[in-house]
Length: 298
Length: 269
Image 1: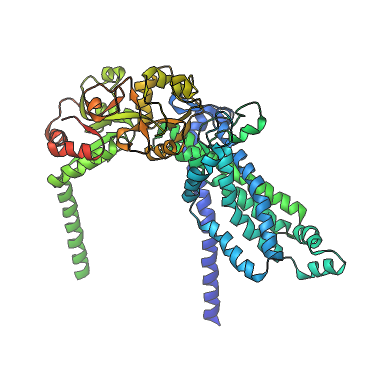
Image 2: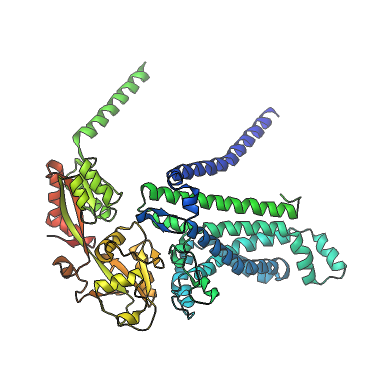
């Protein structure tokens, strides 16, 4: 009995250390990038970095507002394109598809998650970009928000689909039976009972999707064009803003860190801090929304 | 007691070994341009294989860092992928510049683009966004897609200095890629693209334009007919002596210059 208790305690301690480890890593990463970004924040202030549009390190201009807008826009576009598809696929897999179909579709969706992002980028570069370039608008190079958003939508698809499917499956069977017994059709049951009951799980899926989208780097660099401009319509049609080039926060760091030193490097770390804060904000606010909708959800 | 003795002997022999290592060899530090760095590393490898007792450390940092390191003596040799500036020579009057190789920068377009030749002025106007359609320079009626390297790249710096001059900037709408390889892929898949590439990256997937009639060839770059050529420099503070001189002699030897060619640059000898 005595030794069993000891083993118990030891295992608990090991688990605690393992759990604390990830917190420790997050904190040390944040401390590191924050400290490295201090020179830039001291020199330009938050206003000079976040309030300025022009990023021209050779001339000492380090405004990252255009990149914030670029990251947010491409993420929102990817969500608009990807989320309906992902949730529809989750409903199909959880409720509609027969076993045989599930056995083919589910691994296929999961396989998407295993493809390295550089392969997505390459596909985007040689297949998607030339297709987008066919849209007849002057100045449309094919590289830009639309191509990037399509690539990103496919990349967040597996995350959102699998977690949403699990959430729908986790809804107690009695809900569905009660709904059907009351005379609701299968579709009515899905949309008015199962989806609302699974919404905290689906919300979690969306947060993970947004996190993945904001953090994606390599594929974005390859298709978004990386120009440091505020996305703007190419002609009189406001929709052509989606064909505009842009740069993401992650792309800014990855593209320029090779040769950066001094203030330039520090400003790139400041870009990292902004990205960090942005992702924290998304997580916290999404959590708050989920909790408000469903107080019992963890 | 016996264990203690063994431990003491071990420690003593370790200390001796450490001293021996640092006394036997000479070290040489090279700092600067990240463009010259890979070449310098290859040259250092070749030199060290012939001179086993010499240790060469090659570090990046950029051309300006290289000039400063050589001038202030924090490194034995500085590396720069551009000409030394007037104010740098004023600051460090003893600085000696050794051109070890040259690198041509080609202006490239998609292979199917009918344009074959541009003037430096036309190239400047295209990259700064003044000329926006290929028809303005004798091509088809199509918008020009400008592709460039990212801020801080040595190739971009050299292109800015040799083509854009003091006042012109590369347009903000330019597509930026962070390596010569990525630039080549973008140009080879984008019919109306124009970009600049180091000579070492030219192949049939892109077409190099001639500039005012001078074709982008190594010969033209070596004899000064092709205008967009940058030197790859090693810098020393005062005349090279001892181990520094030995290394520079190796760089200018047939073997060193063969390494220059193998790395895709134009030899100087």
